[in-house]
Image 1: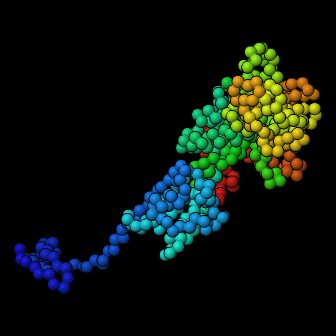
Image 2 (image 1 turned 120 degrees about the vertical axis):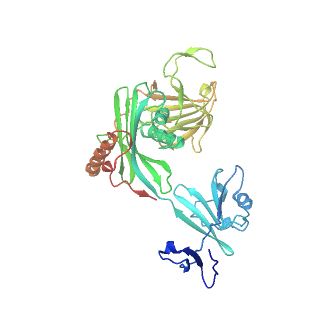
Image 3 (image 1 turned 30 degrees about the horizontal axis):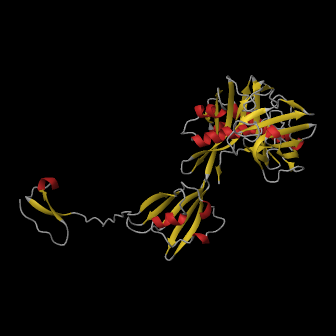
Length: 423
């Protein structure tokens, strides 16, 4: 083989056979490729979490940022430095590993991302909306012990996380608060069905939106609820268009368990005697809010012997309710004050003849104690005539979703235009 020189370009040796000619050697010039610019992104992103008891300024300083004036944030931005919760995650973007951050992002709310961008000698602030798409999702199952445990058993973490499953159980309990005392009425063999809006973000996150329709079958009795907006307010109605709301709640404490049953002879835990129990006890943590079971007027709010701190309310039709052993009273609760259903009137305690923190609740009609669970509270208000036709269309649509099978995300053909992106 001969030796070739390089001059004015790139030359290679090639055999005559490779070129298809019978010459010993030949110099061949190949095309010169254009330069290729390889862009290497040397930026890095670091995630840092706001620690318990730490201020946002301390977190920023840990990342080398000392010139971001948080006091000048637009009040419309949901990022009040004084009220940030621990565990909030901030992302810091650096143009190079050893440089200071030039971009900071944080999810202020599920619907809002706040972005800080360095611009020469200042920081610019912007808000980015996180859009969520709603899809109807159906679950069903048996209730053997509690509603939450039933939902927890039917929904996996990939569908809703534990916190979202708990919130779903709470929302269902609120929907049926006038029909069901979930601490007493659940029996083995009861079942539930529910259609909800499951929200999916553009980032692939999943969360629970709202209940659209549900059905509880308890002791063989089916109670169906359909969500419908009337006068701009969402309300739940039964299949006949009657509101589920009644004059009284079945229980005056949320998320509770009953420690004794109504009207059962029992040995009093403090007096040590056996006597008829005139109400229902709800065991709950000290300080748990106690709600007015219905609209009324405060007859008295003060200490009342064995009741301890007591609130007594007068309602229409000769009905009174009593709330005993309270740790204290809510602001403004005094004789003559008007209260509305669901309003906090006091807090669970253990005053008077109580062996531990709980609420003693009595429902009285013309001075006679009654079992609040068994009192007939009448029917809910019917839907307005002007809304009847629209309600029936929505009821039929939701009933179709409720009866869909199998459980899970409902097929596109069964959806309506509510399959949408929400801000």
